[in-house]
Length: 80
Image (tube, rainbow, N blue to C red; front, top):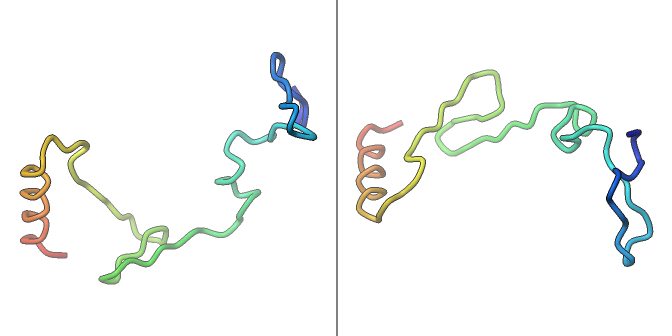
C-alpha cells in the first residue's frame, strides 16, 4: 500500500471528501512531525524530556481509597 491510498476493505464516509493514510504509523510522535524534543518542567525543578532519566512509580491500579491514601502518605513522607 502506498501513502495516501485507501487500505483494502476501507471506504470513505459519505460525509468526508477524501480519505488517506499516513506513511508513518506514529506520525504525530515522529521526528518528521516535530524535530525538537518536548521538555516539560514540573514544580520542584523536575524536568521530563531533558537529558536526565526520570522515573515515575506508583500503583498500577487502585483497589480502594485507603490504598491510594496510604501510598500518597508514604510518598509525601519520603520527600523529593
